[in-house]
Image (cartoon, rainbow, N blue to C red; front, side, top):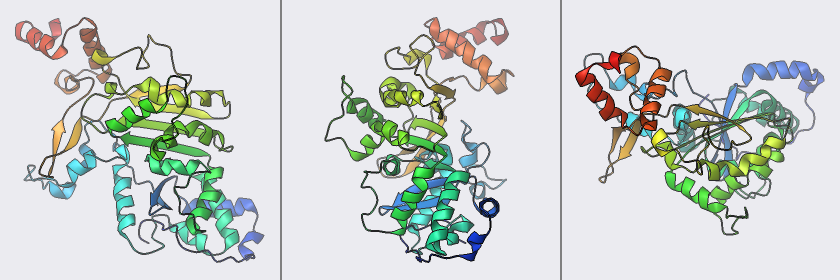
Length: 370
């Protein structure tokens, strides 16, 4: 079966199905064999679609080597251009770039029941199975949302879906309120973070003219609070530019989420790129010396290669590591990445550019004497 599910198809409104004679535990065991562990939600033509998560081990590696197409690099010719590589580096789905490619193929298909989830056909058996399966899939799988427009579906008042009664609206009505685990992965343009920063004024009120995609984020807290069955929330953020993550005002962007810490039944963690010591700002960032966000924040090493669009419309790549910039020391001098991290951070704290400082030290005494 091909990848993707078009949520615009109709559902046979039958009311009886012998399958339901079996206990719920048996039905759940059957469904569990058909439902993937991770599922992406996304929109196409104002209709909700599903696709199984295709992410593989190390797809999130900072060096991005998994994003190269193997067929574009024969063993004897490593310099063959790879047209997919810069596009994958630019993926707005971040480390889920494989999943974005799947979603793109789904959008390009005209067939109404395409899906990487083999069990999708169960939605079309009868209305009773539709509801049962929709609630079960929400109970078994972790769902991913990768853009602000799709994030709007969490708000029951949102008009992001087509207003006509449809398979899509029925699925959203059954699945979304029953979600148990939700992952929000957003790799946004830097301009979007600037808009988010401006969206809430000093009193915390929201402008009435706010763009609906921005309001999807600023209104995320009440939307999440409305998901009474949600037990785990994971938020992954990045921006889409080669410059450092530290350009983002974390405090402004994350402030709408602070009230979620009051929910004792919700396990929340936020995954952010590491801050660059040179640009750390107590008023803009969550640092060791600043007042913390009442939610758990994990830091990761940001991707070091970026896809760049030229003025002529062609795409290339740019190597632009964030922090630490001396990450190659891990191979050159058999250091751990944490040792490099600490060494470079201390250099910045002394007011020294680590590149010039360590190059000078190498010239005179070698790294072992630094």
